[in-house]
Amino acid sequence: MPLDDFNVIESTLREGEQFVGASFTTEQKVEIAQLLDAFGVECIELTSPLASPKSFEDIKTITKLGLKTKVLTHTRCHMEDAKHAIDSGVDGVDVVIGTSSVLREFSHGKDLEQITAVALEVVDYIRSQGLEVRFSTEDSFRSEKSDLFRVYKAVDAIGVNRVGIADTVGIATPRQVYELVSELREHVRADIEFHGHNDSGCAIANAFEALDAGATHVDTTVLGIGERNGITPLGGLIARLYATDPNSVAKYDLTLLRTIDSTVARFVGVDIPFNNYITGITAFTHKAGIHAKAILNNPETYEILDPHAFGMTRYISIAHRLTGWNAIKNRAEQLGLSIDDAHIKTITAHIKALADEKPLSLDDVDGLLRRWSNGDDA
Ligand code: HCA
Ligand code: CU
Image 1 (tube, rainbow, N blue to C red):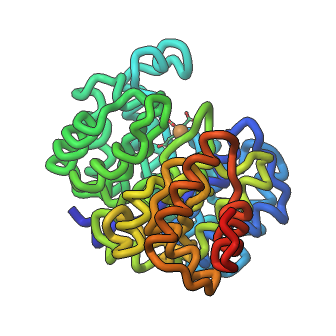
Image 2 (image 1 turned 180 degrees about the vertical axis):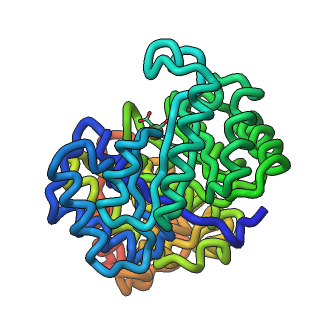
């Protein structure tokens, strides 16, 4: 597919609000919406207007910001919800209803006939009001495929804009996602959206497979925040797509990712994880001597993502026992010190021996290099 023609539905202001640490103020929501708009996401999804009076007011505020991105809200597949959603001024409504037997029994209590009937009524109503509408089945991967396709085909026949597949519990594997989306692609003409939770660590791979199989829209949140351990992270999806083809994400302002991640991290009271895609503190850090040497010769040896494309810089860690003389030589050059290779090798051996005794800092290494270049032997 259409890796050259996909859309991000950024749900930090809906799924992300379901993260335990999230309780955004109006000002914070506006800041997040504006950052995501500047980044270039195609759609943002906001919490249901029925969640609270403030949620309703905040949707109205955000729809009046004049953003380029489409503003969507998310509600149950319910006429009352649909009416409120339309009153809030959004461009479109994402509706969802559970189709798995466990949700049918313990959540809304409707059978498939009733689900189909209400889906048709709500989709038709939203369309009649001139808004875009998406119909999604919660917990799609624990639903009977025949049930899913029956409802999807019914709403497709009356002109739904998008159908959504939701891996609500994070159970799906990339292969299952690929197969379900491919089959659905053959049965509906509507756009296809994928929403994947990360309980078993497959959210990015699943979103990528969905796109590869013909999905047109992928849901993300900043840092992946959401219910439990969240969904496909925006930065992680971007990393995956960039690694496949940098052109596929050239439409976004990638240099904003760091500000976006750090802003949302601050608002929800967490740090950016050290190993986060692109913006984690170690994402572009190289350590072993062999890696450092190759990176210094040509960064492509060990980097599939160019840090500069994201406004980030690479860091080569040299003050440890795995260091190599090429990296130490490079550091001497950075410091403007002229030391011949034989001496650099001796200093490197010394650094390794010292690092076996105690943790070293870059200052320790710099001090050693300076002393040797002054003709001092220790
Ligand atoms: C939830 C709902 C949802 C909806 C996804 C969608 C999910 O459980 O809170 O609208 O496609 O994961 O099923 O986020
Ligand atoms: Cu979800």
